[in-house]
Length: 400
Ligand code: SIN
Ligand code: CO
Image (cartoon, rainbow, N blue to C red):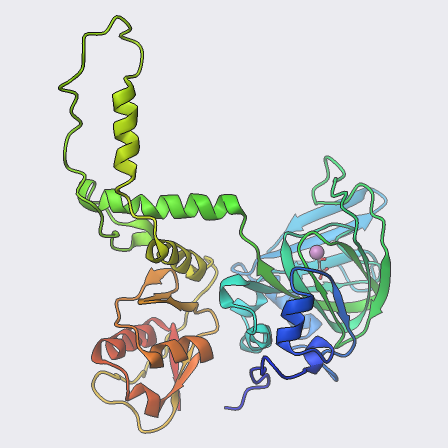
């Protein structure tokens, strides 16, 4: 199957980035400043229709929100929605989160942006809006590409640093929005915004559709906490014996079975004071816990490949058994929901550490999201067993 969106050459100018190469875009704009790209995707036809988005918002497993703005101010409702307002009624927008989990073509569109590491990718959100609809002036803690899919949307952006919000509202609305750019986007136009750039998108006319390809930006606090929690697995490994973090085997750790000793403790006249020696011993124990690249990669790999609850898999009935016989033709493709990443000797899939010997072909599968039959033949036996498991789970499919 030929892809609608073949991968970009990182050194070649591309229309998607307004004639910049991915290398130039990352150097000059990514995380630095907004970029408006006229006709990033000329003749763009969104992967789903407005009616498809309405249908998605009716489904239980799809995360959706309806934002409207009227005489009573802002209102926010969470889906699923049995009824939605008609396009003839102004000032509403419906947002469907992670549409890529539910539609193959939407997931393929999102992967056009894989010149940015998957570790940063979050989801593709689709919004539809009636005339005047929007979520109000706000900022996000995300990098985002706002791609116009249908109709028109007016985007105003601001380089302001005042991020104060109106208190007491159901959604984040800037108290004092001072736009310094104002553009109307047509289908195929795209606006890139780094985190914390204030913006406001308002539908101009009905039938407005915007697709947002969002990139999560973990806070230092999230990274530090996650890493420490994951490192703590080394202690549990030998001393607590329960299942590891995310149900994974524990990290091998140091021997911490020795008891604290204070044979030199002198009699005290201050029995309530914590002994200095006890404090120093506790700190010395911590020195034994490994906090190295492999531990950090393990935490990040498990965390960043873990799936949202509404990522559902649908395994085929007749999957080949690769460990027995590799089909002569065809290819293995990862399911649209599957997250596969690697670092050094470790491979991570859908929140788990894969029990495999890393191989160049497995890395190629992660990078390309597909692997032809002839390359599968090069894989070591344990890789084949892992692929068989993934096929049976529906994490991967065999395309004939
Ligand atoms: C949208 O309305 O489609 C995008 C919302 C946003 O600005 O984050
Ligand atoms: Co936003």
